[in-house]
Image 1 (cartoon, chains in turn orange, green, red, blue):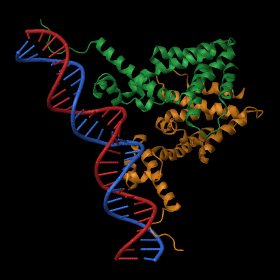
Image 2 (cartoon, rainbow over the protein chains, first blue to last red; image 1 turned 60 degrees about the horizontal axis):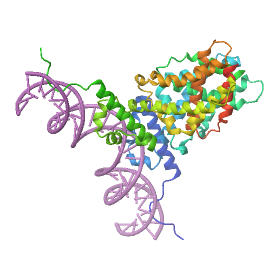
Image 3 (cartoon, rainbow over the protein chains, first blue to last red; image 1 turned 120 degrees about the horizontal axis):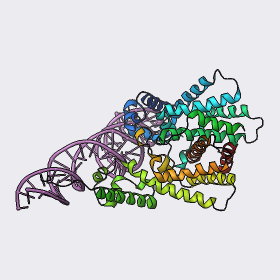
Length: 198
Length: 198
DNA sequence: GCCTTATATGGAACGCGTACCAATTAAATA
DNA sequence: TATTTAATTGGTACGCGTTCCATATAAGGC
């Protein structure tokens, strides 16, 4: 029985290579020119294909942006780890990490916008933030730091989740609500960490 | 000396009435059809003017959306106060309010998107969230609740700011990061409030 | 090479927010 | 009524994300 003739479907390899190529160009555009430069038409020009071709490989723009998150999150994690480096005491480590987290996003509003504000709240099927193992790994850092200051595992997940969402909320507030005199980052993260360790 | 002839500029009253008219229509559109329905062209059609006329009275779309915030925030505050009503004990009141705050935004993702995700992080001149006295009043609710549980005023502002930004962060996380198994709202707000009162 | 089937593409389109501009309209004075 | 000045408007345009579609191209079997 002969196989049907005709053009074969794209191979997994073709698909993977093309997607990587698109993501690579998106990342370069983002790094060199910022969030606003990453348009589908611009991206297609850089890749050397028609915009519609990109839509054949990705569900939409958010699907591409999501791939940039891991680059930003890796950068953030490096920043946090660099600041953690000289610190040994667990509570001080947690405080340093929390402060570095919030400071990072304040210093990089474009990154914050990319990671936390380009996710469409109307489409509940696009919540794939944590499905990426590398993303999970970066937030695992806080799981470990919280575990390092707790004497028991009671409520460890609640404390970690509270810490992480609170830090994200702080970054959001500092970044978007400019006309309110928020207390300093160190004061706010200090208060948060106090509440976690007690 | 005769006054120069010609059409006089719009009066303050004309300006105010037109703006109110636009905002009223925007609010109606938002309430009846949601965030996506509030486009400038649609809004102009409802108002009965050209889209460009709206730009003569508002700086842009965000400038209009900002006026919808107070309606949503009033709704949110009503919801919180309604849940507070039967509660007397200060810590339970704070916990109820925190939980109601987060629950409200989870139950109304469109509202969350409107208030917290339509503010453009690239334009630092648009952070006028708290300049509205009514908005400040709604958040003053938390200032008062926190004051009600503290035995001293030390760090009161840091605790209030931490609480508010953390709650916003929680709402953001529940609304946008769907693939992570966050602990329940009551667990997370409970942890947060514990950290505030101790 | 021909046929077949999948993919990519050019083009058009839609509504979006926003900018620009000449013409029209409105509202005042002389 | 004519003139003046401000406001509004219709129209065009831009790039945006995305959809649609007929056509061109690509890649395989025979």
